[in-house]
Amino acid sequence: MPNRFLTRRTLLAGAATITGGGLILGLSGRHQPSGLPDVPPGSMQPNAYLQVRPDGLIVLQVDKVEMGQGVFTGFATLVAEELGVRPDQIQCRQAPVHPSFQTPSQITAESKSMRTRWDTLRLTGAQAREMLRAAAAERWAAAPESIEVVGNGTLMNLETGERLAYAELARTAAELRVPDHPPLKPTDQFRWIGRHSGRNDAAAKSLGQAGFGLDLRLPGMLTAVVLRPPRFGDKLLDFDGSQALAIAGVKAVVRITSGVAVVADSLWIATRGRDRLIASWSDGPLAGLSADQVRASHAEVLDRNDGVEARAEGDTEGALSAGGSVRTAEYATPYLAHMTMEPMNATAVVGSHRCEIWAPVQAPDFARELACDITGLPREAI
Image 1: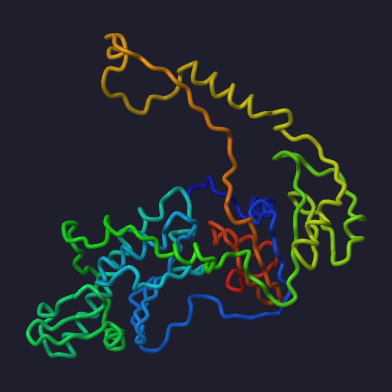
Image 2 (image 1 turned 30 degrees about the horizontal axis):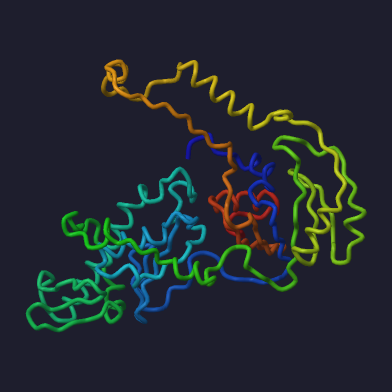
């Protein structure tokens, strides 16, 4: 990634900005294996993205974070198009931090998810399709060109009319070499790309079944809520946490880089404790700045008309001077936060040799680096 991204130490200084006001600290001793999820025996896995399992499940690891922009649906559509299945036959899972997904960093930003995975995921689907086709040809002792991809997760022998489901071929296909350059479908044969409009996560989100970071509950988990400065850039001078600590269930009041955290048995108790904190702040560089001033500065820049011209097409001045009716209007939007619908949060189980994190973040790589700095543990232990 370009050098404009944060360093590990700079990230540490902004830890609370990343984790947000709903920071959750899980203090249990739970252990789970890291890395990619277990792959059942006999599953075909051309790469880290895709698994075709003998139980009929098709699993796609989505290495870009689903933030509501639709990567679960988009990625499934790309793979389905080439694999020869319906998008709803693919089960999408949020991928863990893993070297296979680091190009060079595992991050979701700049509206690049579909652009950067378009070729990769189509190729993945095509590789799996050709491996399954080869497995079917081997089973039927037939020529590969006589095997037709039906389009619903089955293959048909054009000579005999026999059919096999992908699940029945997974074990055989898993033993085959992954082809380097399988043919991709031409655009005029697309069945799903550019046509499929349903969101595969719409029902779960509409019915309250989708899991979010803030839903996680672990044994012995404590919750921290942060008192933040009144303006971005203001610095904490001093605070009094005695009234917060007097509330039953408040475990600690801790000064952090972005304010003061109240740690308690529940979100409600932590929030009550935060509201009882007394803090003083120094003015930062944005003291006195208002929305009106921001808008006025925008207008001043526009009035100067000295911006960089990115593109010139047509004769605007000539058209305006040619007569006719000219309507003028000005539209403005306020300076808004890059705000998530879910409260920003993170959960961590920290031990002497291992740290496990659940966090809805755009950059799991950065989150792991931050955990390395805080815990002193190596990357493979996070």
